[in-house]
Image (cartoon, rainbow, N blue to C red; front, side, top):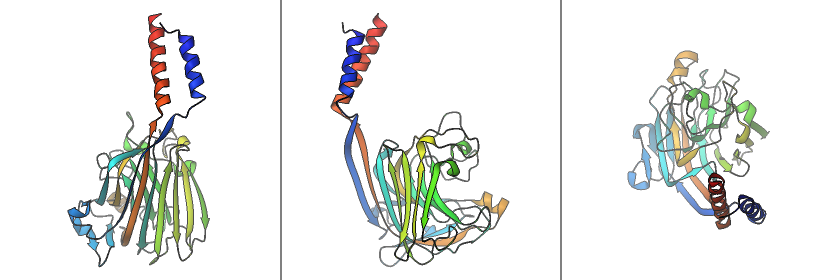
Length: 302
């Protein structure tokens, strides 16, 4: 029988010599929106009337917060989590002026979702269902602190918490560095903007950059290992799972009815690219796990 002290010493020695994980398969895809409303393109759409195929390779998303939620989705065919590294780059033209409404609703919105667990409601109500999202959101609002944009991150559902208490507090988790912005959180109109969302598992940091040839240069990051809930202040576990790119046209009629006018406007999307890497344990690390299991068995037999 192995002695627990011998096993523990062997495990400690091995951990000093090897890393715990290595890169697995890397998945990459680059797509424009040519014929995106045709299922053979690889995209799926919940309401084709909310999108317009343009001449060439672009598509126009018709945002309207009074209408039902609609999405244009491209599924990667595999899942990436908080233990993966990934980068999403999207090019688009914003056609929506700043201070569009007094409603606190988002147009535009796009990014990464989960095809199974991301639902159709995301108004911060306790009964909403849109888990596992990392999206860029623009709020062209003339109240509630003014025009703004940033990352919206909602993790996997935690047992015992309603949707309301899954939302990150941006003030405690987000740091912003702005250079060359034309206004107070107002996106320029009729310019080609590149938005890049990236996540690094080792640091648990999500980052957003916005650039344009006309001088837009914004970077923002959220350290998710210490994020807290916006409403309760409780820590939120950094656990999420995404498998798709999506242009998300959220229904926000609750905000319209309670706080202001509807948000209605168009955004033209040109292309997106995604690269993600999942990590797997090193063979030696698997051996350490096996030694640990043997150690537990040995302790139980004593």
